[in-house]
Length: 363
Image 1 (cartoon, rainbow, N blue to C red):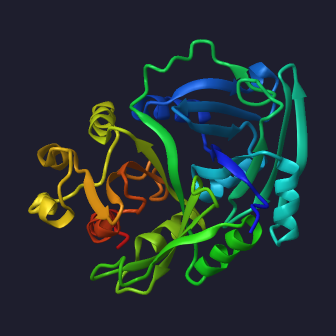
Image 2 (spheres, rainbow, N blue to C red; image 1 turned 90 degrees about the horizontal axis):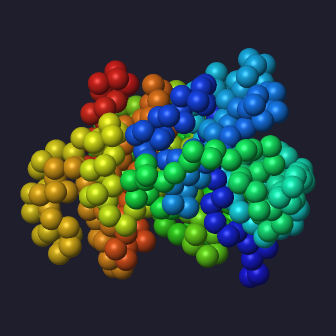
């Protein structure tokens, strides 16, 4: 089947936050991002301030509204700080919008052109799960710093980088019974296919469980896992997320590195906080996952997990939530052939999250 909605890459993720200036400092200091562009009162933006934060090919946009009635303010009131827009670079934003909406997607922003001295910037958007938008961005006729209305930050430099280079995948949490609906949505409207399915037997502990399906586009560059809770004795991490996010949304962002030991070492030195992994996880690790290149003592010291499939192995680690609500967090991942998602670590990860839930009084 022809690719009716060809996607080049993740263009950016836009976060709606309560204080974008402070959030920019947080992502710079703790995660190694550099502020490369800005819009706000000084650039003529009278309602919204935004900071473009970049590292490698990863781009986050942190936006805050300047008035309480603005939709961004209402989003932050409802959901807290979090990802509001998943922006995908496409060859033709008008075509992407028309093809997806005629297949059942609900339009959010009709095809729009903005122009400045650097060319024409085109975009459109459709609704996804919860209040999240999928935005189609076309850059072929635009050479500016980010988009019209943004001005470059001339002091920007890349000395902050901790080695994160691309967005590996973006995970969404949806309500019980809604996962298959959204799987079908991405298949029907955007031509995605099901890469892998994890049931509640695979992802469970004594107390709670979840189910997950991973959707990807034709090239495999865009991976969007979708989780829903499964019935258990106590409240699952997905139910906790849905409660504090007031509905579906982006649960975590996986960022890839070529040297996870160096990256995590720098992140920890900067003050980033990660889930605790018990020392028993590392007993007989190579018997479970086979020979790996990294020293197990260093992985244990940093709390990095390992998993292997038929194509190779991967290393991964998960941060604590990056805001007071137990919602959005980050994953750091390094792949050595494996295209999986750490299935062998699901139980250890779930137990680690449950320990944090218990501390919050939410298990």
